[in-house]
Structures are given as structure tokens and as C-alpha cells.
Image 1 (cartoon, rainbow, N blue to C red):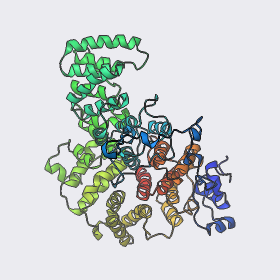
Image 2: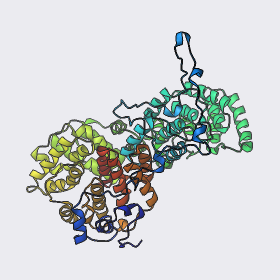
Image 3: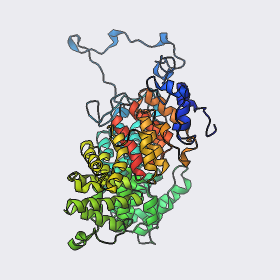
Image 4: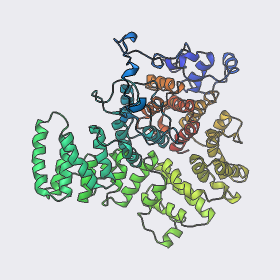
Length: 620
């Protein structure tokens, strides 16, 4: 498909109108500058808004997956029917029924009665093998706080087990996979909640491994080592041998650990399965006093626990390359330098691994005296430096006057944006800005409080700052710029924001400020996903948007799952579309697809939050 062809991708074709061809070519940013709209497009716009993607079934009769099926090779007449007299009876004619064993796949923390629960039908339309494949595809470095929150709720929801091959058929259990994905995502509190309701003796090695690693992360070595001994007996293999050696070293039993290491090396040569990583062997030798710890060991839970025992200082490359899911365990290392600790914490908050409120605690690792805090606003600081961002944030919290606080906030947010952790800065700033009042004298700095409040969902307060900037726009150029930056957030929040008649008017006015075209294109795509079908034709494409996105089949599958309200499948496919990218790195078509799928699932609040992520992560 050429960049300016009116042929539309296969997953868009069922809409099949000239309007959509125009929207895809111009609005989806494959064709160049603003298009005024043809007569055919205008005639199509007269009808109801059309979905970006096809309905799940063209005939209205549902898909094959929705229809009940008889197992292959089984005749309906051959289904067994037990005579009623065969039912177990107690005395006096009372029937006694035997409860079927509970499928561990159904176990969860959130039920239909919980506000955060998704109900018992989240796996509707899927077989067990399909759910297992989708769960395995959750990216460990998922960089969206919104999608991480939705996946947490999904993985904690108690739901009916999908059909298909049961546990014991050679596939990992769904309960084990759910726990493993929470562990990989680094959501330790959610993982502990799930493990507390999970049955103990399932024979599920993946679940047992995850249970042990969760105890290591939380510092419960006694329970971790009890699970390790049990795992050696139940499962055996290299992984469990390493866990046992760690426990022997932690207990000071060097003789047993030395014997275990000898056996591990021999097992490593003969075991056709998992092999002992050399980093573990070096760490174990260092704990025994032979040699030194490797600079950049593989960041597994066991290796990080051994680093903690050694009180070894991890290499900065290890911290930047480690999976996001291991951030909390790495942050627990006492040997971690203050600047490295702040950088790692900001990265974790940016992706949603840690809540924004935790960032203030990590900034406090820098100790500043009162005169330094009072002089922060006038100091020659470099916000790209972790220590200077910590100083600005502590000064912001220290009770300065409102004019000083909004200016400090502006400098702090500028630093987090330059560092690529703008979302972390907005989340950390929320507790500080909720107490600020939008006084006229503060209108020049309204964008900082306004963005933090919009992103945190405090709509009424955020709109007050937006209106404050608008009232002073004629007086101060800074206030006019603040209103221009806050207008997209107000629109994404679903309010009829004043100041510009439409997106094209705002885009034309904003072009002179140097705002990049890719950010404007993502804003238009987000509005399109939220139902404003005219948005895409109002902007010019950016260079990165001129080519079609990769992975069109994935987008088609996401759209089909969303329209069919297959919630579990749609959320897992949305995370696969995102991968390890932030929302702001998506192609406009990808952003529109994820936003529209969330809307289809009645997750409109989360759809708007995800759209704001895209803008904020680009520094808008």
C-alpha cells in the first residue's frame, strides 16, 4: 500500500466508505497536509459515527467461537446420562451431592462484587491454550501505568476457567501464568494477594517458583527457604538447586553450599533442561570468599538477593538494563548510590511499577539543610541531575509561598521531561499541587498544576487552572502558552474546553510555538479513538506517521476482541500492541486502536487516561 493510496488496511475495510478512505489517508496521517473534505466525505459524515474497525461477525449470528461445540469424534447421542437412582443418597431420601474439585484457574482476589473486578466471563470466547499464549505475551517492560493497572485487575479477577485442555496436559497452569506475569511486571503487592488465596499443593512448578521469589523480594528468607527445600523434593532440577544453595549460604552452612555447588556444576553438564548461569556461580563463590562478584550479573531474583548479601554495589548499566519488574528488589539494595537510586525509582514510577507517592521517599535520600532548600529557586541548578531534581522537589514540599511553589514545580517538571520521565514527575507532584489555589497571580505557571491534576483525574481542580490561565492570557504570554498546553488535556478529559473552535484551529495556532507534528498527530488519533471522527482530517502528518504501522493483524485482532466485549483478550492484545514502548511512541493508528478498544469495553476513563499518557510522555 503506497503512502497516499485510498486503499485501506484489511481490518478497516468493512466500513468501506469514501469518508473512511479520506480519514485513513489524511486523518491517519499517511497522506500529507490538511484536507478540506470531499463531497462524498461530507455525505458520509451526515450519518452516525462509524467504528474504526469491523464488527465481530458480519452475519449477526456470532463467531464460531461463540457457538457451543461438541468435542471432535463424539456423537451427541453418545453423551452419558446417569440414571437418577445412581445419585448418592443419605438416610430419609436426602440426596447427597459430591462437590467437584475447584479448578485453580478460577482462583482470584477480585470477584464480581468488587469495584475493581472484571466479572467471571473475562475469558469468554477463548480456550485455555489461547489464554495461556496471550498471558505469556504480556511484556515484562510494559511502559504504561494505565495498562499495568488494568492488567493487575485482570490477573487478580476470579473468573470461570476457559475451555479446552485442562491443567496437567503439558501446558503451564493459568494460575501459575497469572502469578508469573504479576511477578514479571514487578507488582509484588498484587502477587502476594493472589498467592494468599492460591492453593498450596498444586504440583505447579511455575507457581511454586513464583511463590519462592515473592518471598525473597519481601525479605521473608525463612519462608523462601522452606519453599526451596520443598521444591527440591517436588521438582528437582538446576533452578531449585540454586535456590537451595542460596539458602545454605544465607544460613552460613558453607560446607553444604560447597557440596551443592559441586553437584550443581555436575548437574549443569548432564541436565538437558535449564542450566546454571555463570553469574550465580560467581556470586556464590564471592559469598564463600573466593573471588569477587560480577559487575553486571543477570538480574534474576536469586542473583539480586545474593548481591544484597554481599552488599555489592551494582553496575549502573545493570540498573538501566534490568527489567522493570526487578526495580523494587534493586531499590532495596543498601549499597545503591543515591543518584542511581533516584534514577531507578523515577524509571519505575514512569512505567507504573511503583506509585507516584513513593518517589518523594527516594528524593529524600539526599539530605539538604534549610538554607539550601530556601535558596533552591535562585540557585543555578541543572534539572537533568538527580540531586538537583531532588532539591527542587524537597523545596517544593518545604512550605514555600504559592508563587515560589508553582515556579519550583515548573522547573522540576521541566527536569523530569528532559530526563524522559515526565509521567513520573506529574504523579509525584499531585500531592503537592492539590493544595494550591489557582490565584490570578499564578496564571503564568498554570500548566504545571493543571497537567498534574488532569493526569491524576482531578478534573474540577484542573479546569480551574485552565480557566485561570485563560483569564490572564491577554495579560501574560506565559498564561496564553499555559492555556494552549492545557487545552488538549481538557479535550481528552471530555470537557468542551474554551479557547479554540476545533482541533484544526488549535493546531494552526500551536504550530508557531514549535510543538512537533507527531505530538499533534497523536492528539488527533486519541480524539478519533474517543469518537471524534473528524479529528484526523484536521492535522498534518508527521514524518514518522507517513508509513503504515507494523502489526496490522494484531490491530485487527484487538479491534475484534474489543467490539465483541472479550475483555481479557482485548486487554492482553492491547499490551502486546504497546510492547515495551510508551504510549507516546505509538503510531497514531496504534494509539487510536487501543483507545477505541478500551472505549468498546466500557473503560472510557482508562481510555482517556491512556490518551493523556501519550501526550504527557512526549512532554506536552
